[in-house]
Picture 1 (cartoon, one colour):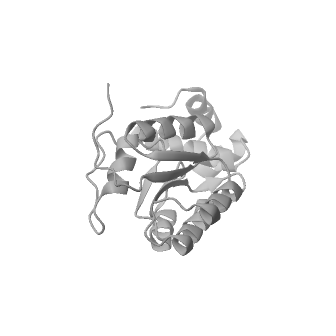
Picture 2 (tube, rainbow, N blue to C red; picture 1 turned 90 degrees about the vertical axis):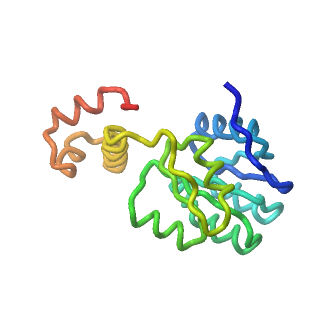
Length: 183
């Protein structure tokens, strides 16, 4: 199956900042196939160096990274290149961080795992217009699973503490954690 055609501008440079290697590489290949000149980066420090030396026209930034927060890069990008269109990605979606990302200058906020077509639609939507809704949004079961995984990670993978914070029986949580992610 080939990638859909997009009207990519002449300045097609894009930076993908994500600490999840397989996801970063997969998204990078997909955006390259759609006509972008992709640079993939793993850390906030690398991203800041790239922004100072050669700021891209577009950016796809993860919210939470090993060495910091993607919002730091949003600020730096807008200082170096005010016309940069930025989409924030996160596996830890919530309303407060979405509002913060938009106020910081991102044009959209997508939950992981984001589809390359959703990213393209968000990046290429005319300023002031909302992109079309995603073709395949996450199911409610997947959103619930992502939330449980986030709390589990934040609790240091402690099942008892996670169950307490989620107000869930420990055994129920263990069964959920043992299953694969829903689609």
